[in-house]
Image (cartoon, rainbow, N blue to C red; front, side):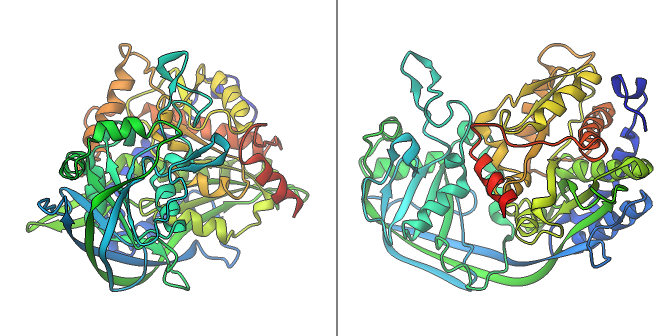
Length: 538
C-alpha cells in the first residue's frame, strides 16, 4: 500500500461500519458486560479469536494459540464499619455512602479500633520537597486522604495552578488512587480512605459505587498480597464532611491546609473498626493475542504492539434486578477497532518489515491487570518492542478536525501522530483534561513503566459539521451519564464516521513504525526515558 496524501485520497482505510458491527455483538446483553471469569469472557474470547483469524492475522502466542492465560483471583467484599469516639454517631451504609474492599487474598479482614488520621493528599514527593506525613508513625492507623494531587495555586496568578508543583493542572502519578493505596501499604497503615470529590476525581461517586459492588480482582499472588494495605476504600464527600465535623474539624479548612508544604497530619479523635468478608475464587482469564508478522528477516523480530481492553464491569444483581454494564464505548469500541486494524495490516503484510502484535487485554477495569501480566510476562521481548499504541474508547460523535494526545510531551510518537493527523486534515492537541490523569489510567501505562514508548489518543472535540463546543459537551455528557454505568450502550445519535477516522490514524502511525522502520523514544524530561535506556542496555 503506497504512502498516502490525505489518507489515501479520502478512501476509508478502516471501515467504520465494521467497527460498529463488532460493537453490536460485544456490547450486546448476550455478552453480559464482558466480566472476566464469566460466560461473558468465554463468548468474548471466542469472538475475538474468530474475528482476528477472519481478518487474516495469525495466533499471537508463540505456542500457536490465540490467548495468553492470566491467572486471577476474584474477591467479592462485604464490608461493615463502626466508629467510636467523636464519630460514634456516624452510621454509614455500603456501597451508597462508602465502598471498602481488599486485595489481600483471605476470607476475612479485620481492623480493630484503628486510629484515624487525616494526611492531606497522602503524598511523599521528594522532588517537590513534599511530605504529608512529617515523620508520623502511621502503622496500624487508617489514613483519610484527599483525591488527586495537591492543587497548588500559581503564586503570580492564583487563578492558575503552579506548573512547577505536581505539573500544574496535569495529574502526576501521586494523584492516582493506586499510588495512595501503595503509599499507605509502604507506611504500614491498616487502611486508606479516599474522600471522593467529583471534580478532582473526574467522575461521579456512582462510578466508585458501581466498581465497589462488583467483584474486585488481583493477579494471583504467591503470598496472598500480604504486603498490600489491608483495606482500600472511598467515602462520599458529604459523609467525609460529617465525619470530620463530628471530630471538630472543617473539611474545607483541612483541604486548604493540605495545599501547603508545612501541612502536618491531623489525628482525629475517633477509631474505626472494620470487617471485610470476602468470597474468593480463582480463575484463568485470558489476553487475546493476534500477530501480523513482518516480512523483513532483519526486522521481523521487532514488534509494534497495539492494545485495547476487552473487559467491562459485567453484571450485578441488586434488589432482585439484574444490571448489565455493556461498555459499548468503554471498550467494545476499542477492541472492535483493533480487529479492523489487524485486517488492514494483514492485507498489506508483504510490505511490513516489523511485526505487528494485537493484544486485547483482560481486567483493565479491575486495575490494568491483563496488561500488567503481559508487561511482566511478555510474549515477545520488551527490548524488541518498538512502541505501544493503546486504544481505550473510540469517539462516537463524528469526524473531527482535532485529535487529543493523552500525556502529551512524553514520547516522539507524537511526531508521527502529528504528521499523519495532518495528512487527514487534522491537528493534534494535548489532552483537554490532564487533571483526570488519563496517562496513568489505561493499559499502555504498564508498558511505559517498563520502558516501552506508548501513545494513547482521545477523540477530538472539534466535530465537523457541528457547532462550537458540541464535542466537549458530548464528552461531558458521556462522563456524567454513561461512563461505567448501564447506559454505556449504542446510542441513536452516534455518528460512526469518527470510528474509521481515528482508527485510521492509529493505523497510519503503526504503519510508519512497522513498514517504514521509524523509531521512537521518550522525550528528554520524561521520567521514563532513563527506564527505556536501561531496558535497551540489558
